[in-house]
Length: 273
Picture 1 (cartoon, helix red, strand yellow):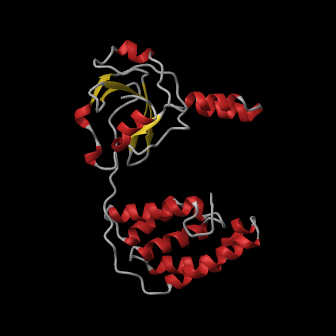
Picture 2 (spheres, rainbow, N blue to C red):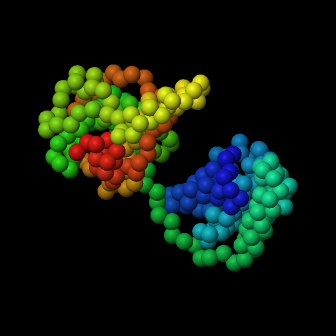
Picture 3 (spheres, helix red, strand yellow):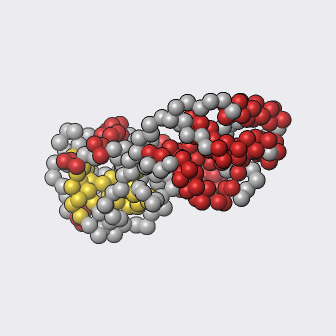
């Protein structure tokens, strides 16, 4: 579990719970159905004494705000507020943070015991799922009318979404090059790459090695849609398939905002226009 503050949602698990519940309601599930599904999915967290209280408090706070707080979740959250285990993480950081967390939980108790707002309409979440595959090369027409070529080097997938992880050839032109050229073309690096490599090399020992490994991932980024309208279909074309690329580790991938911000990203960060 990763917490960076004392607020109910200043925690990785709590934020995941909030997003998951809202998504399930948007998909048409009832609060009871969504809760059962989340309990099944989060069995591991619920078995941990310091994580279970976070789960129930985050779920109750989310349900209350959405106007869908169910009785069983309310009771679990109120019990969690009284549970000494709910303060384990903060006790490790000192009594000052314990007192702040206790105040947050006391405020949550007051909220949960008060009348909740009317149910809010939650929109169905759009799940982008690319049909590209690793080894595909895709031309993309820039606003200038010139082309760049994206190479699919990985896929970030879960049960509902599949996002393409790409790099871009160090090339821009008016005619898409051959598959052989695309496969061998160096990766385009960001404008920060040379500076960051220089700074990394100035470090020592394992810190230097870690920094250099991280910077070697410069130029990998995800392309994805927030809605069906985001996808620039008229500017994209798969121009090669089955290309062989060097095996890639996908840590350090840039998520810059998806298709709607790709033109700005390529122009400003990659100097491609």
